[in-house]
Length: 501
Ligand code: HEM
Image: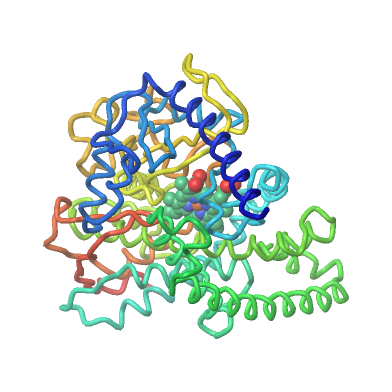
């Protein structure tokens, strides 16, 4: 009897899958296929076996296909790929392409903005968008400033003549920022917050590893691995720390709400850290308990390593291009004269135009989210092709940002002028997507640029960076994020005391 039911289930699943596959094969039959493609494995061998660096190179080569749309087979699952700005725009702005495919379920964060399915995401995103408005970001400036000063203190402890791998310090700084603005904790003083943040980012590393190994995507296979047990243990530990932080936050809110008077109301409101804003939405019944908790994890995970790793690359570029480093420094001296004090304001941050171009050029050559994916929620028509429900699109931002027809023959070279307003005129709006595009883009994009600018100012008024490495020496690997496979050490030389006071 049981055997009969099993056979029936397998037969039904096979028929459904076959029908789906035939639809996929038919609609995509005229699209070029990435080569080499083998029966059963498809293009999955691109992701297996070779070293991290070779895998990065072969995926990048596969994604450089000149066709507007082309396909890649992950075993029996087809991915429809593009590196074309027009296609990227059509996909990322299509209301039926706001869904994330099944591999985001590996994050086990379906109630947090990043990995949430559309029906949960839609309301959350609408509710959380105001949390990142300019007024609130401006209130975070003192936190960014304090953390960047701590970064300088930590980097100063390294001997001047020994190369330093700076990314670790940058990541600590961005983690400190995101914990300050999300849960209001100083990770230097609160060991619980530090532990939680560390666990969240380590869990992300485990997920990235699993992400790349399609054979571990099936839960029952993953459960047989040691990684699964480690990941579960870390999740359980993280929940314990998170519980305490929430409890402390609730107690603080109860105390504060009892003592608000009109005179201290403004102080109470500043800065409006994310957990307070989320708990307000919780009070209004817009977010549930689990949504608040998972969005706290999401902000810590999405907001720390991303900016931290990008800052590591920015520092590499400063060190490799001394004349450009001096140009950024000259601008900083102009905006923050040595005779004054370092007071950040929205206006003076806006005046750091070249500094911003420098950051943005780093994001062009090294987009931390190198490939983004979306899934169709219903049948759609794209460029005259009928695309069925459940189709997964992969947009290679890394390849898009290095297209010679968009960025010129020197597209692979580092040149901040690429992002100058004059040179950007007439460029396709979706040719530059470090923060993705459309309604499901990075909610933290302005937060990231602002915090990185403040870090740059502190770094350059205190240090001069030197390196003998060249751009072509940098080798990358794919995780969930773009990473250097080996980070070159750079020299961190002290500058003379900058401010007169
Ligand atoms: C250099 C820094 C950053 C880069 C390059 C970056 C890039 C991205 C990209 C490409 C996405 C889209 C991912 C996808 O569709 O799969 C994304 C989403 C997201 N990012 Fe960022 N990010 C950065 C910093 C931040 C910061 C500082 C925060 C928060 C404080 C943040 C929070 C998020 C969240 C919550 C999402 C999910 C948005 C949604 O689905 O509605 N990111 N980010």
